[in-house]
Length: 298
Ligand code: NAP
Image (cartoon, rainbow, N blue to C red; front, side, top):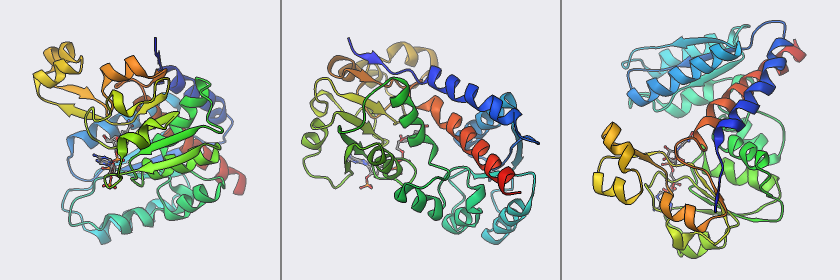
C-alpha cells in the first residue's frame, strides 16, 4: 500500500525547531504583511500567516491599503518597511490589483527582508546555490522529502509547472539535492512519457486531477502541490471526494488523481494536509533566518 506523506508532522517539526532560535534573539522577529483590497482567498492565507506568527512569538503587522492604491503609494509603504529596524521580513500578498505594477512592487522589497524569496537577487542566490530566503512551497517540499527519507540524490525528478513561485525554484532545489531534473509545462510534448520516467514527480499546474495513472511510474513518489476547488458532484464522486462535497458543497482536489495515485505510487502527498501545511512553516523559517542575519550584522 502506498505511503501517505502527511505534511502535518513535518510542519510541527519545523515550527518546534524555530522556537529556541526565536528565544535566542534579543527581540522577536518582525514580519510585515501587505494585503491590498479584499480578495477572499488572500484574506484566508494572510489570516493563517498572522496566526502562525502569534503562535510562535513572531511580531506581525498587517497593512491593509485600499483596492484603489497606486503603485507609487505602495512603493512608499514598502520603502518605510525597508527602513524599519523592527521589521525583518516583508510579504506582499499577491495578486495585487490590476492598476498596480506588481513586478515593481515586489522588486522594491529589500532583498534582505524578502520573506517569500521572490526577489531576483534571492532567485539568483538559489540558482547559484548560495544561502538566502527560498520560495516557501518548494522549500517545504524538500523538508518533507527529507523528513520521510525519500532519497533525492541520483534520482530522476520531473516538475510539472514552471511558475516563478513553485515550478522553477522547485527544479533548482531538487537539482541542488543532486536529482536529475526535467521541467515540464503546457507546451511539453509527450507529457505522459516525460512524467512516467520520474522517480519523484512534483505536480504544480493548477489543473484538477490531470495526473492520472498513466503519468505515474509504478513505485514513484508523487508530490501534489495543486489546490483546486471543484463544484461538480459527479466529478467529486469520481475522485473519491463525495463525502467532502456533501458537507461543503465543493471539494478540494490537487493536480493528481487521488484514486490513481494511491494505487500506483509508492508514496504521495494528500490534498489537503500534504504540501499545504509546509508553506506557512517555511515562511516562518525564512522570517527567523532573516532576523538572525540582521542580528548578526547589527
Ligand atoms: P501558475 O503560475 O498558474 O503556473 C502553472 C504552471 O503549470 C505553468 O508553468 C503552466 O505552463 C503549467 N501548466 C498548466 N497547465 C498545464 C498542462 N495542461 N500541462 C502541463 N503544464 C501545464 O501556478 P502556480 O502558482 O505555480 O500554482 C500551481 C498550483 O499549485 C495551483 O493549484 C496553486 O493553487 C497551487 N499552490 C499551492 C501552494 C500550497 O501551499 N499548497 C502554494 C502555491 C501554489 P506554462 O508556463 O506553459 O503556461
